[in-house]
Image 1 (spheres, rainbow, N blue to C red):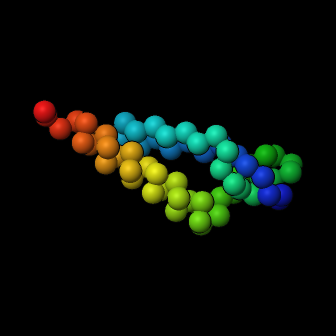
Image 2: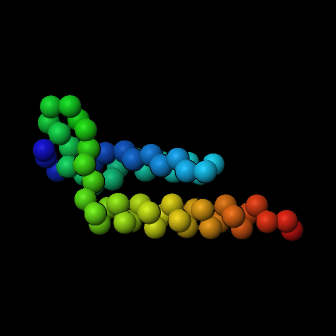
Image 3: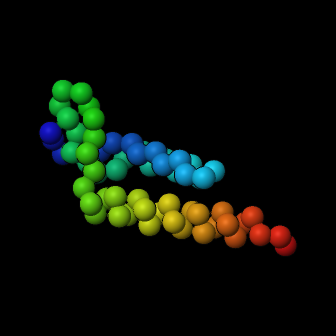
Length: 61
């Protein structure tokens, strides 16, 4: 494994978030990324913010 960056895609209940370059450990042989807890926590924060905004947009005016 070597330190690098990898894309991360989250699809949850109609929400699709794509981050192109998330810090990760990347396997030298197969390219599979492994994300550390801090990066996962940050991505979860982003997804929750998007979910809140999507919910707000879905409310009747």
